[in-house]
Image 1 (cartoon, rainbow, N blue to C red):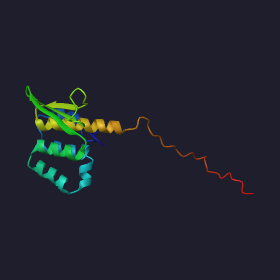
Image 2 (image 1 turned 30 degrees about the horizontal axis):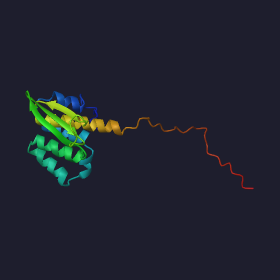
Image 3 (image 1 turned 180 degrees about the horizontal axis):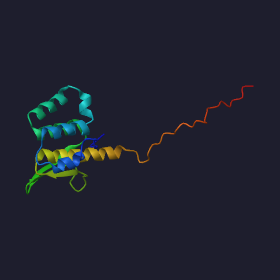
Image 4 (image 1 turned 135 degrees about the vertical axis):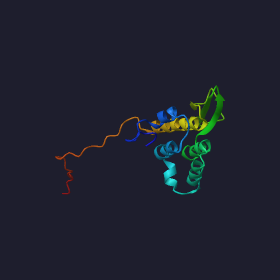
Length: 155
Protein backbone atom coordinates (compact mmCIF):
# COMPACT_ATOMS: atom_id res chain seq x y z
CA UNK A 1 0.00 0.00 0.00
CA UNK A 2 1.84 3.09 -1.19
CA UNK A 3 0.91 6.56 -0.05
CA UNK A 4 -2.48 5.26 0.96
CA UNK A 5 -4.83 6.80 3.47
CA UNK A 6 -5.07 5.18 6.86
CA UNK A 7 -8.33 5.30 8.80
CA UNK A 8 -6.87 7.60 11.45
CA UNK A 9 -5.01 9.86 8.96
CA UNK A 10 -7.12 12.86 7.91
CA UNK A 11 -4.98 13.56 4.81
CA UNK A 12 -2.95 11.42 2.43
CA UNK A 13 0.82 11.65 2.75
CA UNK A 14 1.29 13.85 -0.33
CA UNK A 15 -1.05 16.49 1.10
CA UNK A 16 0.49 16.25 4.56
CA UNK A 17 3.94 16.83 3.06
CA UNK A 18 2.69 19.77 1.02
CA UNK A 19 1.02 21.37 4.06
CA UNK A 20 3.91 20.79 6.49
CA UNK A 21 6.18 23.73 7.34
CA UNK A 22 9.12 21.62 8.51
CA UNK A 23 9.99 17.96 8.80
CA UNK A 24 9.10 16.20 12.05
CA UNK A 25 9.73 12.73 13.43
CA UNK A 26 6.04 11.60 13.39
CA UNK A 27 5.70 12.56 9.74
CA UNK A 28 8.89 10.69 8.79
CA UNK A 29 7.73 7.61 10.67
CA UNK A 30 4.36 7.76 8.90
CA UNK A 31 6.14 7.90 5.54
CA UNK A 32 8.29 4.90 6.47
CA UNK A 33 5.23 2.98 7.74
CA UNK A 34 2.91 3.72 4.82
CA UNK A 35 5.01 4.41 1.74
CA UNK A 36 7.95 2.05 2.19
CA UNK A 37 7.66 -1.61 1.30
CA UNK A 38 11.29 -2.73 1.48
CA UNK A 39 12.40 -1.22 4.78
CA UNK A 40 10.10 -3.33 7.02
CA UNK A 41 11.34 -6.49 5.28
CA UNK A 42 14.97 -5.56 5.99
CA UNK A 43 14.46 -5.84 9.74
CA UNK A 44 17.47 -4.55 11.66
CA UNK A 45 19.99 -4.90 8.85
CA UNK A 46 22.41 -2.10 8.07
CA UNK A 47 20.25 -0.03 5.64
CA UNK A 48 17.30 0.00 8.03
CA UNK A 49 19.55 0.74 11.01
CA UNK A 50 21.15 3.60 9.07
CA UNK A 51 17.76 5.21 8.44
CA UNK A 52 16.88 4.79 12.11
CA UNK A 53 20.11 6.55 13.11
CA UNK A 54 19.45 9.39 10.64
CA UNK A 55 15.89 9.85 11.94
CA UNK A 56 17.15 9.84 15.54
CA UNK A 57 19.71 12.51 14.60
CA UNK A 58 16.99 14.49 12.76
CA UNK A 59 19.08 14.44 9.58
CA UNK A 60 15.95 14.65 7.46
CA UNK A 61 17.50 15.26 4.03
CA UNK A 62 19.98 12.42 4.50
CA UNK A 63 17.18 10.15 5.72
CA UNK A 64 15.09 11.04 2.65
CA UNK A 65 18.01 10.23 0.34
CA UNK A 66 18.61 6.94 2.17
CA UNK A 67 14.90 6.05 1.79
CA UNK A 68 15.13 6.72 -1.94
CA UNK A 69 18.25 4.59 -2.22
CA UNK A 70 16.50 1.59 -0.61
CA UNK A 71 12.95 1.98 -1.90
CA UNK A 72 13.64 3.29 -5.40
CA UNK A 73 16.90 1.68 -6.53
CA UNK A 74 16.21 2.43 -10.21
CA UNK A 75 15.55 6.13 -9.57
CA UNK A 76 18.17 8.81 -8.94
CA UNK A 77 18.16 12.43 -7.95
CA UNK A 78 18.46 14.36 -11.19
CA UNK A 79 18.37 17.89 -9.84
CA UNK A 80 18.15 19.76 -6.56
CA UNK A 81 17.82 23.52 -6.96
CA UNK A 82 17.04 26.31 -4.51
CA UNK A 83 15.19 29.11 -6.26
CA UNK A 84 13.13 32.00 -4.87
CA UNK A 85 12.73 30.46 -1.43
CA UNK A 86 11.84 26.93 -2.54
CA UNK A 87 13.73 23.71 -3.09
CA UNK A 88 13.01 22.01 -6.41
CA UNK A 89 13.79 18.30 -6.57
CA UNK A 90 13.63 16.10 -9.67
CA UNK A 91 13.94 12.31 -9.67
CA UNK A 92 14.66 10.37 -12.83
CA UNK A 93 15.26 6.83 -13.98
CA UNK A 94 17.80 7.87 -16.61
CA UNK A 95 19.81 10.78 -15.36
CA UNK A 96 22.21 10.81 -18.32
CA UNK A 97 19.52 11.75 -20.85
CA UNK A 98 19.08 15.40 -21.79
CA UNK A 99 16.31 17.21 -19.93
CA UNK A 100 14.06 17.37 -22.96
CA UNK A 101 14.17 13.56 -23.42
CA UNK A 102 13.87 12.56 -19.79
CA UNK A 103 10.61 12.02 -17.93
CA UNK A 104 11.38 13.23 -14.42
CA UNK A 105 9.15 13.50 -11.39
CA UNK A 106 9.47 16.93 -9.82
CA UNK A 107 8.41 18.34 -6.47
CA UNK A 108 9.02 21.58 -4.61
CA UNK A 109 8.82 22.82 -1.04
CA UNK A 110 10.42 25.44 1.19
CA UNK A 111 12.11 22.64 3.19
CA UNK A 112 14.70 20.46 1.43
CA UNK A 113 13.68 17.21 3.14
CA UNK A 114 10.01 17.82 2.39
CA UNK A 115 10.81 18.52 -1.27
CA UNK A 116 12.80 15.26 -1.49
CA UNK A 117 10.07 13.27 0.25
CA UNK A 118 7.33 14.84 -1.89
CA UNK A 119 9.16 13.67 -5.01
CA UNK A 120 9.64 10.26 -3.37
CA UNK A 121 5.89 9.93 -2.69
CA UNK A 122 5.07 11.06 -6.25
CA UNK A 123 7.35 8.35 -7.66
CA UNK A 124 5.91 5.73 -5.30
CA UNK A 125 2.40 6.66 -6.44
CA UNK A 126 3.39 6.59 -10.12
CA UNK A 127 5.12 3.21 -9.74
CA UNK A 128 2.08 1.77 -7.93
CA UNK A 129 -0.27 3.02 -10.65
CA UNK A 130 1.99 1.68 -13.42
CA UNK A 131 2.16 -1.76 -11.82
CA UNK A 132 -1.61 -1.98 -11.51
CA UNK A 133 -3.13 -4.07 -14.32
CA UNK A 134 -5.24 -2.24 -16.88
CA UNK A 135 -8.03 -4.80 -16.58
CA UNK A 136 -9.42 -5.40 -13.11
CA UNK A 137 -9.23 -8.96 -11.93
CA UNK A 138 -12.47 -10.57 -10.84
CA UNK A 139 -12.58 -13.83 -8.99
CA UNK A 140 -15.40 -16.07 -10.03
CA UNK A 141 -17.89 -16.63 -7.28
CA UNK A 142 -18.65 -20.27 -6.70
CA UNK A 143 -22.15 -21.16 -7.80
CA UNK A 144 -24.07 -23.32 -5.35
CA UNK A 145 -25.63 -25.27 -8.23
CA UNK A 146 -22.35 -25.93 -9.98
CA UNK A 147 -20.60 -29.25 -9.42
CA UNK A 148 -17.75 -30.60 -11.52
CA UNK A 149 -18.70 -33.67 -13.49
CA UNK A 150 -16.53 -36.25 -15.23
CA UNK A 151 -17.83 -36.93 -18.75
CA UNK A 152 -15.38 -39.60 -19.89
CA UNK A 153 -16.63 -42.84 -21.37
CA UNK A 154 -14.32 -45.65 -20.24
CA UNK A 155 -16.11 -48.48 -22.02
